[in-house]
Image 1 (cartoon, one colour):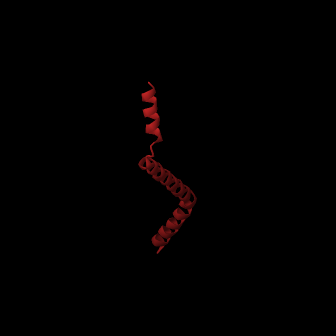
Image 2: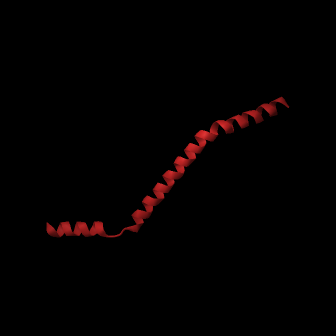
Image 3: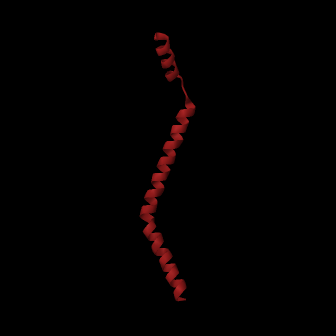
Length: 61
């Protein structure tokens, strides 16, 4: 039993940078996604108005 616990602790103490890097990339991806969503929420109505004005000008010409 002591051998199993020491092996388990040794396994967790090993530096596994591959998993750490994967977590970092996941956090960066989540941060970028949040920034894009917030930008779309604020800029979406403005862009929609611009396209509506362009469409009205094209239909009126």
